[in-house]
Image 1: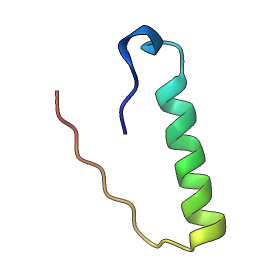
Image 2 (image 1 turned 120 degrees about the vertical axis):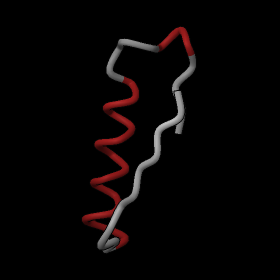
Image 3 (image 1 turned 135 degrees about the vertical axis):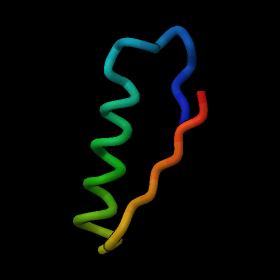
Length: 39
């Protein structure tokens, strides 16, 4: 997942992550989510 530069600092990434976790928890029944960061 990535957020385009014009949207940095506006909470877009946090909203995407929150909805992804909601989807995994409540619909897909995923037990573990991994995250890797590249800077």
